[in-house]
Image (tube, rainbow, N blue to C red; front, side, top):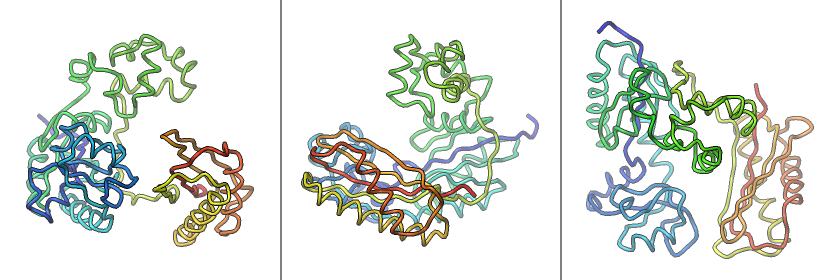
Length: 343
């Protein structure tokens, strides 16, 4: 085989749980759940669960109390962001030692653009290097674009290597449900099923115009392209620049008082405003997230008349958005987010 451009997707296995187990070896082999302050009797959600905990049905985003019911013997630990960031930096530094363009897309994953005649051998070398440097295992997906590399990683887990290309896409993916596609969640999959599109092959054979009518002129054709395995081939090492900053709080007891909720919005907005100042980029849009009891989430946002870093203006906008939302219902979570102006 001649030297060819490949995209590799490196994904650390059960990253947060693995970091915790690495510094607490006595937890190896036990179900570990990380989330909130680590107390499953209090409100919070699962950030990650070890494979042992996942066997009990525990997954990311699940309330900690639900996780405790599903897996009472699990060890619950609080989220420790600085520790995960430190380990992530070591992993990414290890990846940059290879002859590749490294695009970091999160604490635990990155795309690598490589030119090699043997991508499987390179993937094996990457896995060995990450394990030697950090003690953590990773899975590597190999593809001829980002979508196929990312999808291949799912078949590689845990701690394996898998390849998915244009030639093999249909044979591997055609019969799978539409939510097997990167970017298609359960809700979108359900909407596709309403159109009789239940598999990747169904979606790939659909009429793009009909999809555009149902999902909009941008997303409809996009889902059609996903089903055909189309994706971006460019891997960029341009440093990640956040699109905004947000803060949120989960209340241990539902809040019902309008005055208490307004005060919480003010506090969150001030914290977000400080994040905006620290970032050195003005906010152009302010949004609010509210979760009513038991678990109904709504989001709304407001475009500012002019980009600003002023705390008073960000707070004013957050309160205006809050005023649009339904009042009088018990609230379990509030969040405020500022989106930066495009540079």
